[in-house]
Image 1 (tube, rainbow over the protein chains, first blue to last red):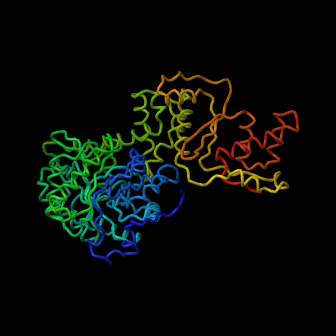
Image 2 (image 1 turned 90 degrees about the vertical axis):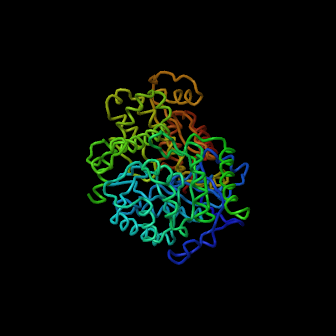
Image 3 (image 1 turned 180 degrees about the horizontal axis):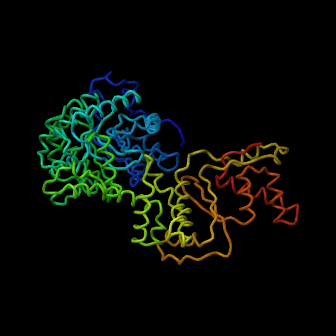
Length: 302
Length: 258
């Protein structure tokens, strides 16, 4: 328990060690296979049954606590699985100064977890010292590109590694935007030289909410930067769609995922579930579905 | 409108829907107000869920509507300033103590304080507790000056309402007893042992000794206090040692200094 270090035989971490931003090919991180978001509801099942999940993604902030159950389970599960870290509070698009206390905590957690990579969202989450605990949209314009890219560079320098930025679902379009979301996303990651966590469901949700063709989005991605894929469900209200992660992945998202794999090649993929948690087997079935799509596109080798 | 103003204006909309941000949002089949409303709803809903998660018994005691009203008022007064939601609800006991109509129902603040201490114990740092072996190594002549450092998860909680039966009824899925004032103050200890958050009530002499030990009183001072409770002087060290052993076996003690 406590601060014990986790070093395992099937650890995939060493190849990542000590890499500096820009010191690696954009696509040099490992292909991890098919994973799941680690959620407290499944801690015991995972420890007892050690299911055939290739890797887990943890929600970074859930483990930014002093001690107790979260860190105990984190360490215990880490011994059996590779992990990546996924944050929601970096506020990379925010206009408050970067939260150095948060970054220090993040760096310490990276030391403990030794993740294959870390990610956060292309959005802002706070303003004026307030944390809004939501992934809020940015305007798509040159000012925002430069602003975010500068901050990503600072974060990558501080952490000594590239980060992944994820596209978020959105419900508004600013009149200040003068380009598409995918042009903006691409420009940010290229300017900042960071990697991408592409959320296929978020593309679908935003396409429905803003009336664009999700394939245009997928096709516009710089494929050598796409390091990870998220799949999830949402709540469909007909005229609009909300990114709730409380339903199974829908067919149009599976089809878009297949198109994405054809476009990018094999990409580490995982299912996110954050509410109305089903029995663990149902998530495993969804993971099998993702795996099957991978095999359809690439053959068994994937 | 630059990025900073845009974000400030968006935040104002989340906080109280009073903001010019809607002018900068495109309307189509769905109005800009409706689209912004999706964010405002999500913001409030998420924070209310956090309070429900941290204060499940208070939620149950107050009922859906009253708890919702409380939550909305709290969110307005204490917007989150931490990246972790773990801290968001920390002002609620004080909020209930200070604000009408809640301060007229003092059992609400007391129950909230109890639930928040459970949250604190759950999240406290993983310092190891000392064992009986550590105690066996204390040289006899050092006993009078030894003092204790309690585990970071340990909290004393003083109460004068039937908070514990209310909490236990909720835990067992039974109807909650109505709030009832006790004849006198009582104290319980809240702590975490083997990842489980626990509490137990204290006898009056243990209450006094625990408070004194927490404030740094040494073993001889603790024994002296026991003379208020125990007439037979020979029984005093026995009681003191019994209490110490209990505290150690329950993983309450992080360190012994002498």
